[in-house]
Image (cartoon, rainbow, N blue to C red; front, top):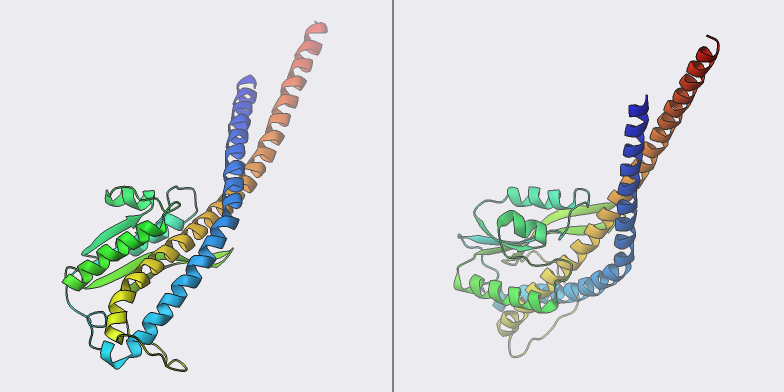
Length: 266
């Protein structure tokens, strides 16, 4: 009986320590979420603007036969965005599943979890900067134009709501050309192909940067939800263990009283 009580006390202490950790991680995720959401909104707005410009350019007849619109056979590359840490529900595993479905592609990982998985140098997803986005965009654009890559994809996570996030694969280049006719018209100086060649790098950089910021918000949301679930489960386990401990302690006290009473009657 004494051994059972001791084991229950050890178990209660262990779960209580875990509860403190999960509570702290949930609070950290919540505190980072507001600032991360603001950054996501700003970067997404800018990325949307650059995408609209690219869409307008792709409607120009002079750009239809340009290199950025042509589909070619060859090697593709994939920019993969995952988290720097674990304990975020299915956030990282969903990204890995999308990546596993792609064959024969060069990987450009962002986030410690995916960097470790593909054995590439660490690039932080939480602290990914606009300068890093522009450097990566310039590198990818140069390799696309030279023909080293014929397709540039990105794997990230879309923030739908606090309860729903969706992992996606999006092709950045070549441009699909399937854009809806926009109202009004625009004139490009000196000409549309020249503007297209300059705008593509900006488009790639803004798309990558916005995807990283949005994915980080999804990571924080998933982690907060996972820690909330862990808190509830831990508290439920503690309640059950406390009941077992009280019963075991009461049983031990009853046994002691019985032994004392039996001894006094002899």
